[in-house]
Each structure stands twice: as C-alpha cells, then as structure tokens.
Length: 122
Image (cartoon, one colour):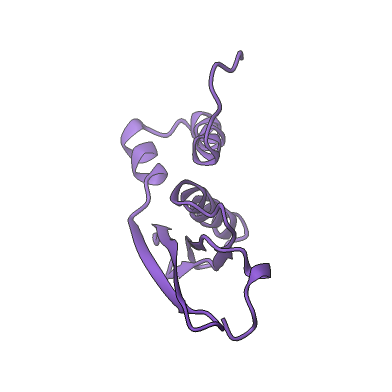
C-alpha cells in the first residue's frame, strides 16, 4: 500500500481494528459503534506555579467503551498529548482489557505538559 499522507495514531489504531473486524466478519453498524468513543471531554487545567503565576494546560479525557465494565485508563502527561492521541490510547485500553479478560472498559486522559519542567508542588 502506497502512503500518500501521514495517518494519525487514531487512524492507525482503526486500521488494526478493521483488519481484526474483517477476520471476525463484523457488520458495519457494530464496527462503527466499537470504533467511536462514548464520551470525550476537553478541559483546561490551571496550575499555580512556584513563582505565583498561573499556567493553564490543555487536557482531555476519552471514555472509549464501557461494555465490559467501568472505565480503566490512566493519564498521560506529555507536551503532545492531544485529543487524537488520547482517543487512540483509550481505544487501545478497551482492546487490552478485553484480550486479558478484565471486567473493565477502556479510557485514557492526557495533559499537555512536560512534567520534567514542573516542581513536585506544581
């Protein structure tokens, strides 16, 4: 396959999903439901820095699928942790918990910050 444009990480996750769905002969409606996140939240996280200034960090939480149980998934702290990446990681968590037969759904959070640049109090 010749690539004409760069795929997002979420598009790549869905390529793997589609390959598996083809092998399982899933119908289109079920595929669409399993690909989409059930809930996505964008928030701003204000943090008072040690110098007294307030910085605001973009963050998101994606709850991908709760079909197997309550949402499971941590938070990624990284300058490039955007919604597209968090969607992909939430989807991965859904499939990981299902593969190891945990009674959990998949979710993930992300905060756009370099934790190495913060103090322990920040």
